[in-house]
Image 1 (cartoon, protein in one colour):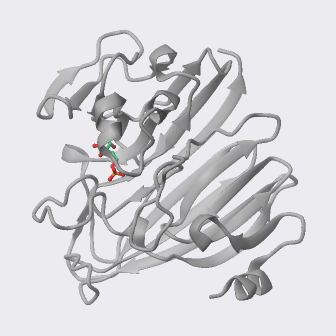
Image 2 (spheres, rainbow, N blue to C red):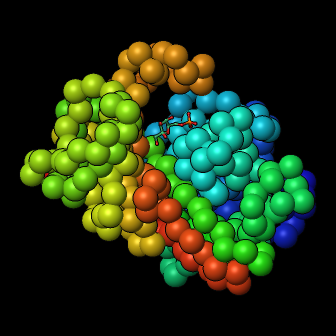
Length: 302
Ligand code: TA6
């Protein structure tokens, strides 16, 4: 659909409109009383969320691609139907292909007095160039308010079981990653991506950052609290339908190696990803549905 067609079908004056975003890609701009947001149809990618009375919460890279066929760096990329490298074919796109797809808008409705809910959809099937083992349909519901609630629902529309790994790969803005803490994952086993994915255990203290960090915490449904003394705020990340939490910061050397990541930008971001990865892969039976949800909130102070 063109931007005019999207506006004719879904715009709500004063609350939501469609517009050309960066790179000319179509995005939905939400200006609800509870919060503002941008959602690109490219990847159904939430790139911006600012709850009322707060600074922006999501980090977006200044050097991000905004091009068909390339992922956006920052916000909340949707990793599906595989997280990281494809299990059998390293030539397939990292983190799956739905973050590269153009999604359809299915509905846009007011949510209470102060919010808005938009639902987007896409499909993957063996007949497409994606060569997934099994066809599926996705619905992604984005609720913008004082909290940001994202729900990814997958339906297996094939005749075989569908095994997926996935993540809502949220990037958060921080004043300085070296000064934040993340609590909630104490005494949890993780695979250390900086050490050949060896299993390790988080001690009984919150996570702090002193170097490249790339961890898949397993078998955890815990809520995480990101305490940022520099921005004087706490971000809470609560989830359901997810047994893994991924924590990532590339640090200086890896950031410099990524063409779409500014050399100095790593200090201002951290990812806390609501995932089902590695041994937490999910099996969806034929005709079955499953959903993963994250709820992000932000409050002033520790
Ligand atoms: O979630 C962490 C991670 O899997 C890292 O290994 C790193 O590669 C990151 O995601 C970003 O991946 P991308 O394909 O967006 O560059």
